Length: 134
Image (cartoon, rainbow, N blue to C red; front, side, top):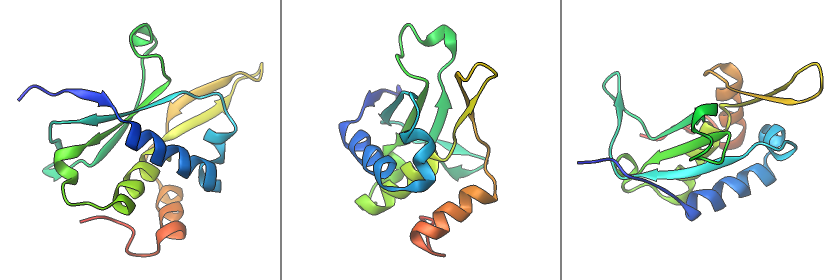
């Protein structure tokens, strides 16, 4: 099966609601960062485990084709049967990987934030100890 990714209005709407409502994502809300939300038709695994979502920084050389700083991809086949709340949890988690800092001239600099305790704390604060799916 050839992977196709398409821009998802559903995931864009979910993400925007999360960004607008949650202070853990204020750095996104208050920045000029551009994020495109994609749905993939192909399942993905890493180290034998299903990958539900992935946040990636768009390389400068690809910006001519992808007018964004980041993409958030949701792997739909791995999310079959999940309700909207579970999908929001995945998107929230992926948005925590969007790193925004500032250079000496005050310009935004983007990076991927690796998993850390802050990430898990934000999920725990929002959904409690049972925040993970599956």
